[in-house]
Structures are given as structure tokens and as C-alpha cells.
Image 1: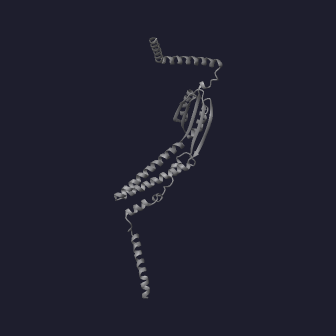
Image 2: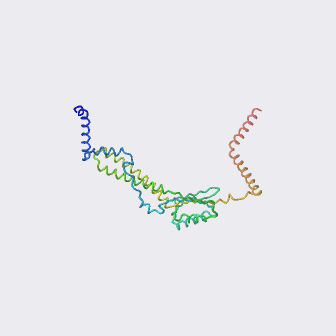
Image 3: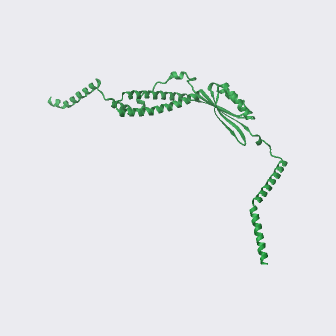
Length: 281
């Protein structure tokens, strides 16, 4: 019996101590705030704040929330009267609530052209494409495509909500902090998180604008008349040859006039040689 008690006495002691510790923890005696903050900072981002539920209510306000499309179109048109067609296009756009986002004018020896980047509400995209294709002499190229960005929209929205929830928890944690080091660490994390949120929100606004307004790239040009002329006739070529010969004659004459110092030097040298020869005789 004594040997039995001696064998189990250490184990019984450890069991009693462990029970007391568990009892004290359950009565509210736990680690300090500093330890809790360090565990919060060391935890992965997904463990710091659970992802916020997806904002279905916001998506209900977006047209076609189940399938969000970004539409883009391209038109290439040949024109006979470039400036007239340019003015006509600018008069057409207000009727479709469209506007020119950017434009570029190019004038070369071969052709003159405009390249317009037009924004139009998605509901009027097809109608404007058909109307613009009837401007000018003829349509060379016409194309359009639609990109489904529904998942990208939802992912960006969910990411922003999750980041904002994490930002809220950081601010709550900052209000409870008592150590200066902890405050500085939380503020640094808040600044980094705020920069991330602003970046995501900028991408989200751009995506919303692309969904609401479609893009049409319109290129229309006019071939210059001097490049449409036929091969010149024999008489024209003969007249140009005479003109070229006369231009060459004038060029040689001017070149000789420019060499007058050399002529004076040559004449002076010749006279000096004659004088010396006469003296010797």
C-alpha cells in the first residue's frame, strides 16, 4: 500500500495543479492585452477578420447583375470629305448621350485622318455603332466584342468589404492599446491597409465606369488627291525635263559666280608670269 502511494503521489500532485490552472483561466484570469495584440499581428490576414458577406443589395442596383458586360467596338471608315464627316459625327453623339474621351488628328502626304475614342451608355451602344457605320463614303471594318466581368466585379467588391472590416478591427484595437510601441505598429498597419483599400476602390470605380459606358474606337480617313493622279504624260515629262535643265544651268552659273576669287587669283598669277617673262627677255 505504501509503495502504491509513493508511485502515484507525483502524478496526483500534477493533476491537482493542472486543475487549478484551468479553473483560474475559466474564472477570467487570462493573458494581458499585449500578448493578445501580438497574437493578432502574427495571425494570417484571413484569421484577423472574417470576410464580410457579399453585398448582394449593392449588386441589385446594378443593371444585369447576374452578367456584367464590358462592350467595345471598332469602326474604320473611308471619307471623301473629312471635315464634313467630322462635324456630322460630333452632331450625332449628343443624341446618344455619348462623348469623345480622346481624339487624334494625323495629316500626312498620303492621307488625313481622325481617330476618336467615344464613350456611350451601354444601352445605346449598338444603335450608335449602326449610325456611325453609315457616315462617310464606305465602312472598311466594323467589329465589336463583349467581355463578361461579373466575377471580377464580385471579387473586387468582396475584397473591399473584407479590407474595410479588417480596418475597423484595427481601429478598435488601436483604441484599446496602452503601449506606444503597439500604437505605432497598429498605425503603420492601418496606413498600409488604407493604401490597399484605395487601390482596390480605384480599380472598382474604373470597372463600374467600363460597365456603364461602352467604348467605340472610330477611325476615319481621307486619301489626299495628289496621290490619286495618274502617271504623267510624255508632254508633262518633257516640260519637267526642260525645267530641270534650266534649273541646272542656273545652278552652274551661280556656282561659277561663287568662284570669282579663284578667277581673280588665276588672272593675277597669269599676268605676273607674263611680266617676269618680259623682264628676262
